[in-house]
Length: 234
Length: 234
DNA sequence: CAAAATCTTTACGCTTTCTTAATGCAGGAT
DNA sequence: ATCCTGCATTAAGAAAGCGTAAAGATTTTG
Image 1 (cartoon, helix red, strand yellow):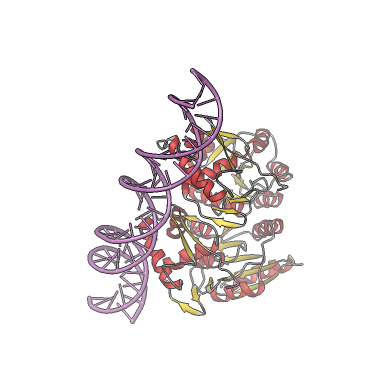
Image 2 (tube, protein in one colour):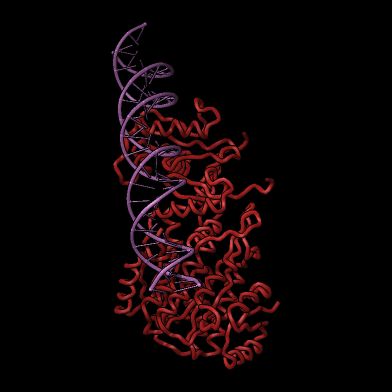
């Protein structure tokens, strides 16, 4: 997924420059023109990096940093016209991660953004989804792209894996044939329903204890399939 | 406990300046005058921060950063006389955390050190960071860039080595062709999947006991490859 | 500058995975 | 019961991908 960057900048010219730059790099971003708006957007968009111009119209930059730091560790890169040593130190000690002085090189800023992003990638946020799905004897390790049944690894082909992941992401819900086809075959021309049945059969053969009495994947005639949540007491 | 800082600097004047500065701040520190000594001291003192002058007498600064990064996440602050944009970007992308240009303000450097220390305090680095990777009969010595199989050193070419390192850094995970290509060939995007297959073949010939029944590198058709964790009981 | 090492490309036989078609079964409607 | 519809399952063919060897291109080394 694309990384989200919040730009806090009231100078329209520089804002546009940054906007263009970030767009070419495939980053998602939003621009806030004052501190109040920025704080609001911090909450709503949950950015991965904040780029902050210290010269805010409505509040002191250092106060802004401290406020953000009071509840989030989002990396903050300060971009400022003020190159005064004292400003830098204040900002850095308040919680900023980096400080770039205007005029700055666009490529250098991008490199410093990459540094910040790299760090947050290594140190995953708590709200990140669980990397492993457990349902009865079935385990899907999303990060490793592997499937376990009753403790033993089971080999599944790419399509089988995608199917399983889609089902697992919607445990308990009935998913229509169409939905499954779209999810698995992406935008590509949807292979048809008969094909889906074949995959379900092979999947069941691999993960069900008794494929003729499936407990994981349930058929809903004329509609689709769903993965059942397994009784934990079993 | 006092934080430990490793200074890599061959200019005696600047070295003394930093030495005095750090002393007043109650930091423990050590100075290394070339890359080889610095790497050795990295291992022995396990610094919390590394301050690096890019102009090393015995090796390229970027190489030094990459070598450290191949096994440790210790924050690296580069201090350099070279203010060239390209140098900065290279160093930052190689794994440096910050880049300060000479002549620099002592207080600013101290502030940036505090930023680095603050971060490592928040998410303590696992001390499982080892300069040598062991998996069954396979050993990779990240610092020496050497590979051992069943106790005997095996010669691998640069690309083979990089591939092996990437695989080892993600043991147990299936890595896509794309991911591997990006990791190994960096931003340059020549070579394609067929080429990757060739390298896998030669790697297997070198590290597998029986290349036709690989136990280290497993193929995932249409997806990629993964390195398997070897049974310790074997 | 030549030799050696490394990397890239290509081709071909072989395996895995995907698609399609055929058969048989179950449940509801007539 | 008999027909019809939709599903499961199997098998076979098609497509895509894989491993390997060898030759050509490039880079490194002496």
